[in-house]
Image (tube, rainbow, N blue to C red; front, side, top):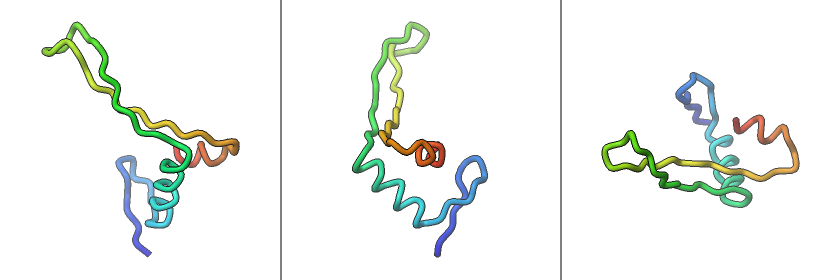
Length: 64
């Protein structure tokens, strides 16, 4: 079993990555939002948003 470390130092197994991938594929979305922003050079910015819908709150806490 392969284990990796994410940006905050938490251990994540390959099985957990696979589960999260399937969860997002089935009950979620990854979106890129383009917003106007006066302080930026090109007057806009891109924001990436991840949304997951679940009835079970502990799964959402786990993803977070």
